[in-house]
Length: 300
Image 1 (cartoon, rainbow, N blue to C red):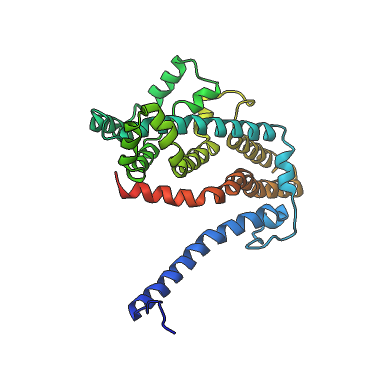
Image 2 (cartoon, helix red, strand yellow):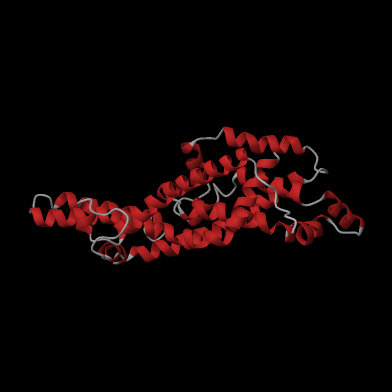
């Protein structure tokens, strides 16, 4: 029987061996810290404080999670983060697509000028104080729009989307639709958007991760605990636990050790509370994520 498989040379075999070794090392670098975080989160706080936990939980316990979720604001933080993430992602994707699609069309006049203006904002910005003053003058401080609108457009994401429209959708398809009498809106909504599902998934993931991990903008523009996202609430829980640990040091060795142990264990449980939702969503869009990055690296 004839074999259709290509015979690898010695150099190819050596390359594959070293490539496999490198990828295994990268996997270890990623997996080991994650295993340590999970193990510490589900271990007894005293064992975490004494450094006995490495890859497997020691003294299985959920005390740190109980401490986190007994705080009434934690559910409020989750609710706010979900709202900010869903609504902010929707707004950002719409704005990005509206900006990217015209820049991908050859018929657009002054396309180079508009692209240059977008690129300019990647290199130069107004700064923190002017941005805050603009948000304040627009009466957006202490509102959800204050954390969603100012950063609703990422020029990097817009370039990726523009590249997708320009390289993945043939210009002949647009021309055929226009010959058949389709207008600009019809071409956009009935041809471009249905074919842009991969890039929509990529943009949604990019924006969703950024909004879910939002912290600084929330601290800067929001003043109410009822509006804080999850990251700020988790930071407050950690700060309160650290403060309590500092206050009880003088009250006795046993109380101090227990409080310090809980504070150390909280570091890992809060990491899991913040990461698990995004980790659960990522596998469903991972293939689009890799494709979107590849598209963005091919053309500019």
